Amino acid sequence: MVDPRQTISQISLAHAVFGFVAVTCVILSGFIWLLISSRSEQLTTAALDNAVRLRTESAAENLARTLHSDWHDLQQLASLIGTHSDNEITALMAGLQGDGSRISWLGLADTAGNVRYASGNMLVGQDVSSRPWFRGGLRGGFAGDVHEAVLLASLLPETAEGEVPRFIDLALPVRDEAGEVTGVLGMHIDAAWLKRQLSETAETLNIDLFLVAADGSVSLWTTEADPGSSGLAIMRAAQAGVAASDRETWPDGKDYFSILVPSVTYDDLPNFGWRVVGRLEAASFAPAMQDALGTIGAVVLSAISLLAGLTAIFVYLFVRPIEALAQTATRIANGDEEFPPERGNTREIAQLSAAVARIQEQRDYRPSAADVS
Image (cartoon, rainbow, N blue to C red):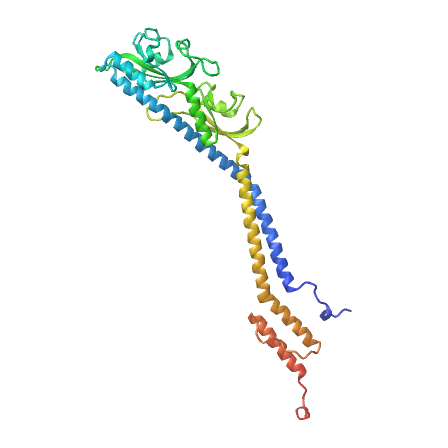
């Protein structure tokens, strides 16, 4: 039968402390990793949704503000008609048109639809009564979606791509002092300029933008190819004109987060009927997420290193003295004449040292004959 007192554990107290800390670190690290893994997709989705939402709303407002400046200029010009001569109005139109890179045409038609005067004298005397901008302008403020030039097609040069120029329209009625409508003032804004504006905004915000008409067709886009409707849920929502957001696979085979802004308006700017769709590639935040995970990993490793250092200090200050006392007690039990340390870093060590010293004194005590008698 083995004497229990001869059985010595192979695990020291220091090793037990280090082992406990190591197992705790492994468990905590695993728990943190599982938590981050389960939450990373959710966090990425929330971040992408928020990013595409803010950027698309900003793009829509920026577009509306830009066009509102043209609408304001058109209102100012309408207020001057009737108080200035025809030559002066024509000169004002030419000044407002500038080099024509933004505003392609300005003109005033009477209530019968005959153009009385216009920038560059283009279409003067022509009948525009069937044009949507004229009919809409008679009823009040009008904004027209992108369309190809009709009457101006033969008067303006083709685009760099060899295409017929395209415009968007702004129009409003001109009234006399009695408030009676005397004509319609119209403005054609170059769609190529508008697309450049939209593309610059998209590049600045690092997002793809699509200007969608009320019927669901895409009027302008900032990507290389027109996506069309392609059965996309976000495009169906655009046709319905309701705010929406979605993650889906587009015709290029990539996953995107997309959001729909259902209207492009600012102040008293007439409604073009546009919706703005903004999209952001789902993988665009992957590098940022990897950086975040790397940062978290570095923090965890730093915390583990700090904990290991503190554990080593703790073992040196509080565990090693216990081991030294145990070794001293073992040597005393084997008959060595040695005194245990009288002081320790903790109260328990001091108590154990004192107890070992008393046991040693009792062992070394030899009673005299007088004590026996």
